[in-house]
Length: 227
Image (cartoon, rainbow, N blue to C red; front, side):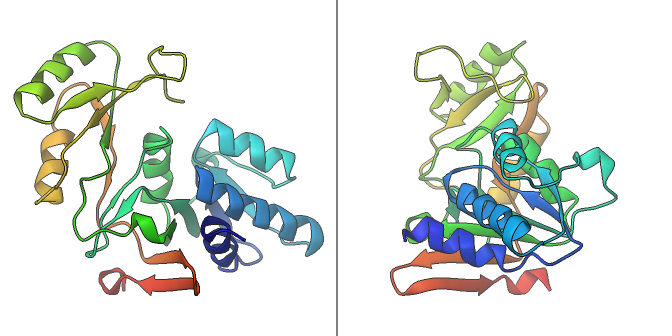
């Protein structure tokens, strides 16, 4: 069993009967969704899933997990998702899988957020992983110029066949190579006020529990600020 699979299966143990569960996106979250699907089928687990991407929706439907959209539920009990980086003070970067907007919407309406990662995603400070910024296509080139002038080293995300990637929401993603983000809160506030920016991949003061897949087994780290 690989580290991602280990973390995903461990995270699924937090899901209980009757819960509304946010189902994350990405390679680690995929294992968690598989395990929840197994429990629905083999253990008669009764939950409602709320997906964070079209890819997760497709996977969940194939596994027989009942789904509703975020607008059809009053709240989400628990959301389990991956992260691209988690800092020592429990801030995160997400959006490597291009699902950051829907992921942040579901996370915002969740009572508890659990991230599942392997050891490589744990960092002292955020920034080595490129920060995704989801933008509307109209005016996106102006934002590229602005980010270049700021020294943010922006790149417009492309698909494997070199066409511009379009998110589930119909937007572009500009990735910023910042190396070290000294003040994530200030950067998040700056990006929030830019016209044309729909959302960014800084997930600040969001996560309550991080489950880390390590060689010695899954390690659960609780964010004391989430109490």
